[in-house]
Image (cartoon, rainbow, N blue to C red):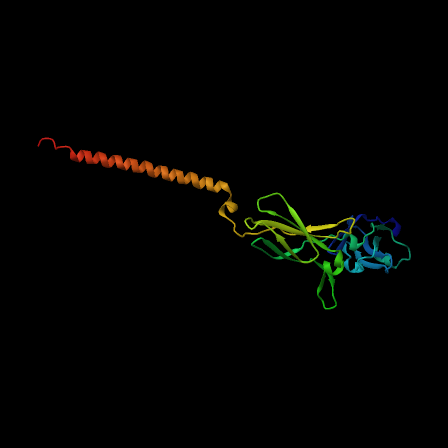
Length: 260
């Protein structure tokens, strides 16, 4: 009967920007899995019915992102769905998307360094949830004033980082106009107890006033200097040799011819 079927183990939630996947083990043999999502106040929802996979996208079942959910991974036979007997199942840990989904990478749209100002414009990560008009909601649409962004920036080829915080989608930072700067951004929810900080964006570096020394380092200049010295030395040596040969030739031409 159903009670003899093995139950799932290692049930875990994986969620980035509210796209949430349930994963578990082992691969079934001779039976199937069905996922049930139980909310504290919402109706039970079935997902991935009679699947032989060991993961299930449950994003649609977690639309009330502030609700706390528990997943049951039921082990069933194909005919067992009509049975009144409760199938064996494994329970997940509780999961609240609003508090636990990982914040994804912000996208840098534009950045400029002019005079002593570094200006950066970036975009909020999008979620799988849509507005009625079909456009995707961003994490800002869901977190609203709980959402902040942190900027980490430093002088190019330096290890000392500085940071700044904003609730908007722009940064304007005072910098040294004689140096280039590198930076990255990450989203953060200060009110969270876990997963407070999100994924880091790509690192970008400005290139205003970048010199060859900044680009290639002092080693290239040392090599160029050595080559230049070698060329100058060779030119001097050749000049001395040619000069001596000219003097020797002139001296021979001045000598009287023998036998005259």
